[in-house]
Image (cartoon, rainbow, N blue to C red; front, side):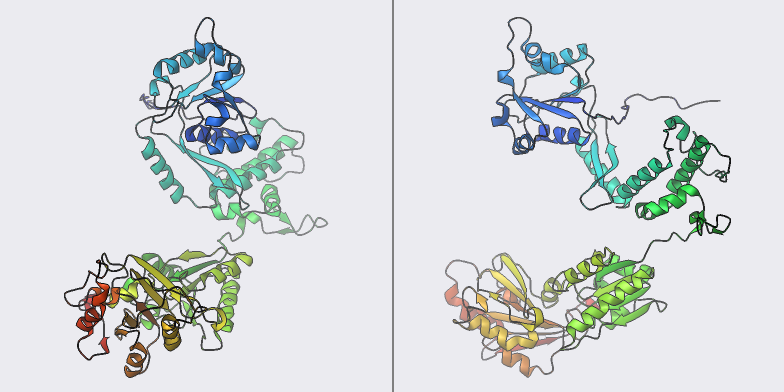
Length: 589
């Protein structure tokens, strides 16, 4: 027989219950505030001692003093030594009944940084009283260290769960410990904190009212697995036997139920778990309904709100592709999502297309939201498929709030927005050094069809207008009219400023019409029937990469050459240019 050989260098990782225990913190900077917050969450009583007291304390510590969460003492007001060390005289009375000491004013960059000699004296003083010490940046003066800790959310919004995880590298990489902690947290279900709290409530319900000894209520009795039959309820069982049986049920569901199911338990669910069986009525105990332990415990329905990108199937994110091809039971699609994307959905998945047309947009929107809630209520996974990115003029906010009000928290999956992809497919950079230092994205039509106020002209900014091509004449008038104050916030746009209309961006029938604000309305009319969806790109970036390029738009004194610049771009006596199809090379994708 052999057992594992111990290998030194590790820490004994413990968790302490510190209700009303005294914690002493030296220092008053952000690190001291961080240590104080951790100790407050452990229900400790905290005293902070620092030179300058409250006047030198960081904002968080001052706020916590105002909230009466801790007290701050000025080191200089403490008793001074007539014999012995300064530290012994100053700290002596504060060390009585203290559980831990955290020395944070040794951190590099601290204005009143404590020297090593003083830190050593404090360490010896505490060790003589058997008080564990942590000294920042001095590992040899530490009896314990702080883990990179995360505390999970509780079952109610804004609450903190009892569940915490901590990661330590034993001093070999504090920054890396934080990263490892974040990656672990990212792998765990977000409901795990709520699940722990609900199981904790169930454990409390499992204890008998006369407080049987805790060791008699062990969930697994030392076994590595709770996978043992739970004894049937006996009419003659004692209170201890009853508690033991109930705790075994706690162990069973803790081990085998999905985290999401544990997090969603109601008190009624807990009662049925602890009973191990469910009677149809108190008056008919011999008539049993199926045990809750055999119920279908699949997750309730889910709603994914996903973006399909500008149209080309290769621009779907992996997350959206997964939702459409592997998760969906029902897809509720916007009208303009192209057939090439819908073709990826398995034939076994039901697909419904929104019946949006002028005058019916609100009705179609409501119909889609109600259909999603109805299907999710039946346990289905619903994918609400939006064009582009759902939160860029995709009305995602309305849907999130609607679904939440009906008990579903949707998963919002970003998509490639046409506000950036559209210009790129047209050969136009949204930003370009020397041409466009900023980007503004706006809509051409407001809620219920109202006009919107467009931003004023800035030479170094590109303006992308979504959903405005059908109102092109009105948008251009708002940009050019000096008196259009209600429809434009800022300077008038120059007549010769380049503009591009990008229709069906990324699709085989893509069309790009480039011109100036002066001629764009006539240019679009001459191009023939419109091809929605379309967007406008307005600004000098439109011509920046044409031909050999023009990236000197923002150079000093070049504004006088703008007319020449535009003529060089469009050609003599040419008001516009129309380009059809995708850029060269996209056929390979």
